[in-house]
Length: 157
Length: 131
Length: 158
Image (cartoon, rainbow over all chains, first blue to last red; front, side, top):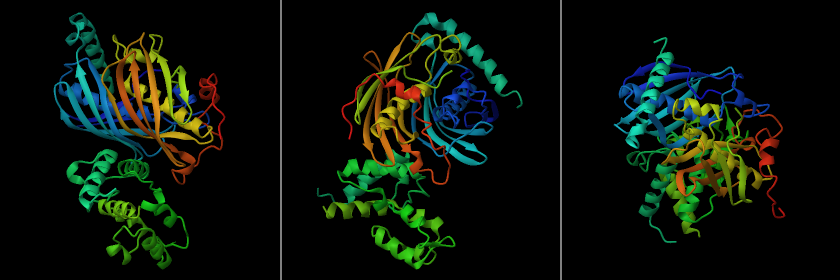
């Protein structure tokens, strides 16, 4: 399974708000376990969709300055309903603050206009070279790959 | 456990800020849990668990938030509004809540607006005094 | 990719607490997207590992009769990342358990290092989410999950 939980970024207002979508398909293997006879997108992957959306807001805003963007805190993540294969979820994430190494957001996920998840998230961003200079090469490689992934996600806009 | 109303309010506000991710200044005494603070079904359970811990008392959810019993009973609801029997039941079950204008227009969609921060404080005050 | 984020239970105190562990390995394909060139276990999957640990603890408390679903992540905080070759332990405690729901706290460690703290709420779905239809059988606690605890002996339950 590929760990990319967004399919397209549909709009992005630099440093402010991002919208993205993800399709859910039975082709996604883990659905066989979650759950057998009742396949639905796992709640944590909906959260991951919000985390990835927020991460793109950071990367774009800071012009891909950092390689590592990780979830530092998630709170009040509430799940209201399920998303089954054949459905599509739209993520909307708004930035509260984006500083050099930390940022905070609030986000929602909607299916057919009905909200199914909402969350508050905080990210931390850094380069591996800050901990160990030998990892500068890894940083550069990750950043190049993420720039490529970003282009793919924004292919239509 | 002797607590005055201000202490109760302060503890209730802290519970709601944690459970709902609300800002300090949003949790005013008149704020509605559902409308203003965005509380949902699972949040009511979270709030009850935290209140039980904060005040050292047991709170059956139907006692503090008795909506389900009312809404699912056909004797109490007709055409989207509470019947007279429904209103009576509501007054009996929620002595901690001010019904105000709701009595004039007992629209069940507005039931949620009855749950204010104040009604939670009232409930806790009643519970602690009856101990 | 399987949707099982713990490898085994190492401690289990029915209705109270449980400790599970997970090995993180290069063989896990998804790590190589997060991130390409420096794989680390995604925090959301660590949350899921905790949810599975706590969910089984809660489910066992009701002898797996209820369909226990993650309803709310109250708070999840992470302070370190986890790499292939690391083994994380997930310790969950039941804070409250009622007919309708359960609230748990948990800590994730790698050795002695605290990686994350996670508090969750689970819902027993047949008793909530009014109106929605679910399959009769308990699709949440499949044999795969129950087999994770088969080697643990439980005291006589009442």
